[in-house]
Amino acid sequence: MEIVVLGCGSVGSGVTRDLVSEESRGIDKVIVSDSREEKAKQVKDELGDDRIDPKFCDVSDRGQTLELLDGADVCVNCVPTRAGYQIDIMKAALEAECPYLDIGGLYHTTLEQKKLHGDFAKEGVPAVLGWVRLLDRLMFLRVMVRKNLKKWKKWSYILSGRIWDRKARFLYLFIPYSLL
Image (cartoon, rainbow, N blue to C red; front, side, top):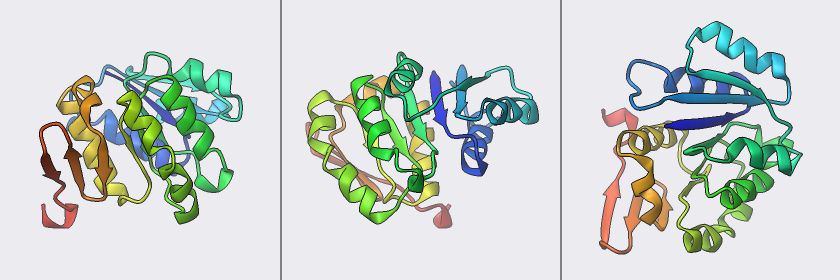
C-alpha cells in the first residue's frame, strides 16, 4: 500500500512516524511531501525507514498534486488548514480517485468540504474530514490499511465516530482512544 502524506511539519512527520511503526502493517511506501523539499528529506533522515520517499510538492499547483496522488492508495492531508488549500487538495484527491484523510479541522473549512460529499459518494471515493478527532482519524487510517483499502470504495457516509455502509445497512462504530 502506498500512502501520500502532504505536509511535513510536526503533524505530518508524526503521522509518517505512525505509518512506518511496527504497529502498522501492509504499508509498502510512504511518500512524504512538502513545498520545502529539505523538510521532507529531514523526515526520512530522522526516521531512517527505506519505505519513506521524500518528494517536493507545491499543493498550490494542481498538476503537481495530481501527479503525486496518481496511483496512491491514500492521501493524508497534513497541510495546515490556515494555508487555505484544503478544498483544492480534496478536489485533487477526488480527481485522482484517491481516498482522502484530512488532519485539519477548522469548522468553516469543514463546512465547505462537506459540500463535496455528493461528488465523493458518486465516485465511491472515501473522505474523512477534520471534524473527527485526530486520533479517531488515525485509527480509521489504520483500519483502512489493515482491511485492504480498495474494499472501502463502497462506503458512502463517514460520520464522526461511525461509518455507515448504505448497501449493507450496517453501522460501524469507532471506539474512542480513551476507552482502549
